[in-house]
Image (cartoon, rainbow, N blue to C red):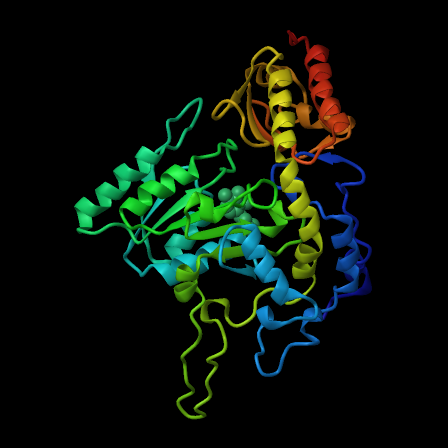
Length: 401
Ligand SMILES: *Cc1c(COP(=O)(O)O)cnc(C)c1O
């Protein structure tokens, strides 16, 4: 064994270089997951192992039945907040999708999904053995996904197999362009064919108002660490009562020798899911989250301001639908790409220049296209962000109109 003290020392006192207190982090995946101060406190108190399991009720031993801490109440409030009947916390958005796909479809079934879907939507479908039909998007520069596209793909499945697909997955806001689809209209189309809809609200629920009942969807999945001011891993799985009958089906297995049964346990959840600190951060942030979704309009205003200000830079153009409906922004920046070709640091010049101004989160090396998210920044930070870009542009002789 050579795990000497020297080798192990590097694991002690690990510091986070890019902590929130030191930098403005505009990485699209980081903005909605910044902890509330309540969650940051709770994290320390609840950090030990199975910390939420002290008062697990012996008659009904299941995470959602625990009343101290108030997990049982939280699940009810969470469902109500999303306009759904039932809610569970799982480890990640991707796990929520996997569970929904697994319980609502069978191997060989079709799922229709938008062509901007997150890779984990494809992988979840693959794990379950589903066949995929992609709804195309309109391509450069808007990359729009339309309700008609869903209708066409459902028709295609009907023609090919004689019946509609088992499921439709709708990415509410995609991770590439921050486009918001017309989820209500898509759900209406799907309902006409009797196709259940899973709404992927990883980038919307928790930061903006999402009401599953109003949208007419069957399942909502979301990501606690992306959009609910919670630590990883936390995912949200919310559903209608009807979908819950299938998704939350309990176990029926019996030990062939011992005759042991586990009829109380929700099968696809393997009984219990997130049984410690991450769940508590999600709960502790919930009041903050309920409050902040009411301020979503102002967040969108910030995004539109940033787009307007950055497009004053020669060669800058935002990609995706207009006007911006979300705070995730994708910029094309031909002029900075030209600068990078002559710069000794190549594409890294932009990262260096931004970091020197206290801004991180734009992928190092990228200049031609890059993404960022201004959600939750103060107006002061937003202005510093755009002024930094203007300054960098002028420094390298790029015109700011
Ligand atoms: C970030 C993201 C995910 C992944 O979320 P996890 O909670 O990390 O699984 C899934 N789908 C979309 C659309 C995303 O943007």
